[in-house]
Image 1: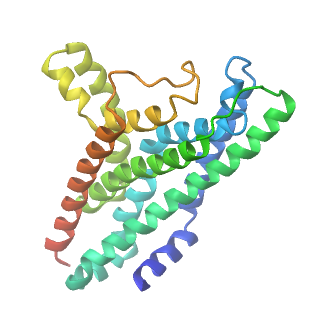
Image 2: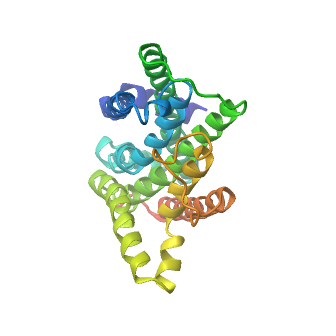
Length: 267
């Protein structure tokens, strides 16, 4: 608990984290207001449907925002000097890395909770200005909770990806660049492999992006209009997405822990 408390204290004190969360909220706010002025899509952002819409949008931003925090955190351990403490205390290395990852994921969860609050406020205001009559499903609250957890799960992949890169290359730039670049590269590769067809299409279906995109889409598909965000019938199922993301996360975590455990202080 002492390690986690120290990491959370550093997390609260660093402006980089605040700026990333502020950017997330600004983007979500602007997009929701913009959609609210589109009469054809307004019902998707009115309360309570706006919560689902905001979480879906947040999921699409995961590859651009969370790697900044995770890559910076892992890579800058060398700049802050605390990496020497980590590498010099071999019996505690695993605990220190896990503590850092938990603190980052708690930050991701706080950011998504702020998104829920913001979308609720904007949705209530938009509904008051231009009321939209639409039946509210009885299980909408459960869907919102599941989508929130799915966003956290998706965020875990990008956190581990950037943290692993920052740790392996001992660089914040490498962690951030690899985390963001991988997200962009996946989109390009998915398009190319899908167009090639055959075995390449199968490869595209098992890239992380396929699972990361399908999970929030399938959870919210019954409650958001198909013109806003439609789940593709060929996308992986919810369970397949959970398992696929879990496998990728397990590999990234194993690589990170192996590197930290085997690396020693050299200077």
